[in-house]
Structures are given as structure tokens and as C-alpha cells.
Length: 205
Image 1: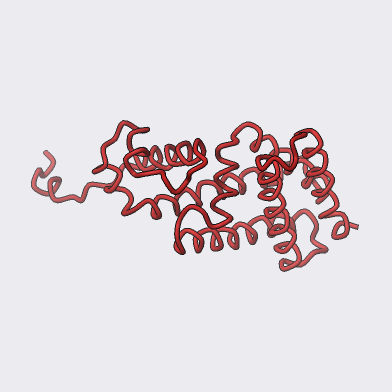
Image 2: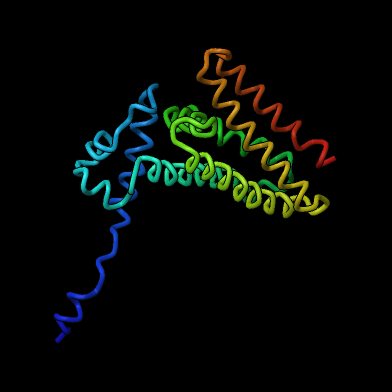
């Protein structure tokens, strides 16, 4: 028989599913509004059917939740930037990876807008901005290592700079897609693909 007293003293672990649900709800809530600073913990909790107590059980504040949202958004960029087996050189990777990023911007506009807002320092305070810079650095290193594997002629620093430039290009394209400067999405897509290719061409040559 299990020891009931021992079981009762075992700390209860946080349920990842509820935490993940709050992060997903936050992405949807922030992505659905143009007034990012007005989003409240109550609104995010309501999207999940949870109460405020559940929100604050997992996150101490909106900024703490935003730090987790930053991680989720950059994890998405990381996944879409990962070279596929048939992407055997930098040029092929740049075109295919940018295509995946563009599809995401088109399919998940709320997420893309949120990435632009957070990268620009809104919403959230210094902790959120620090999380953005920290995750950007980590992501640049991760993608840079993949690019070294695609073209060993490039050292890690060169590839990291290339990766950071590519990530910045993705954010800038997302910004242009929603600020009215580039209303023709097909033209923007073509320009983004061309720039991604040009970005790696001098390195790959």
C-alpha cells in the first residue's frame, strides 16, 4: 500500500497544460488588439476559462507572462528557421526558411504583430525587453550553428551575424506587412525572398 502521509507531503507540480493555455491565450489576446497596454490578466484568464487565482498561480504579473510569450514567439522563429534535410546550402535555406516565415505572417497575423510590438519594446517593461534581447542572442547562436553546418567555410561569428540579420529581416517584413506601407502582399513577399537570398549570397559565394 502506498504511504498516504508521504504522498500528502509531496509538493504539487504546476500543470504545464494550464501554463501553456495561458501563454496561448495571451498571444491571442495581445494579437487581437491594437491597444496592447490595455490587456489585463483578467482578460487573458477569461480566454482560458480560468480565474485570476489560476493566472497568478503561474505568473506573478503580466510582464512575467510576456516573458514566456517572448520565449514562445522566438521558439516559433527557431522552428521555422531550422534547415530541412533538402536545404543543403545557404541559398536554398534562405529561400525556404523565409517562405516559412512569410507563411506564418500570413497565417498568424496576430502573432506576427505581437512579435513586432514586443521587439519594439511595447508592451512590457525592462524585463520584457531584456527577455527579447536575451532570446534574440540565443536564437542567433542556435541558427548560426546550423548555418555553419550548411557552409563550414563560415566561422561561428559570421554565421551568428548572418542569423541575426535574417531574424531582423523577418521582424521588419512583419512590420511592413501591417503598417500600410506595403499594401501589396505579393510584392512584399517577392522583396523579402530576394533580400533573404541576397543576405546569404556574398557568404555563400
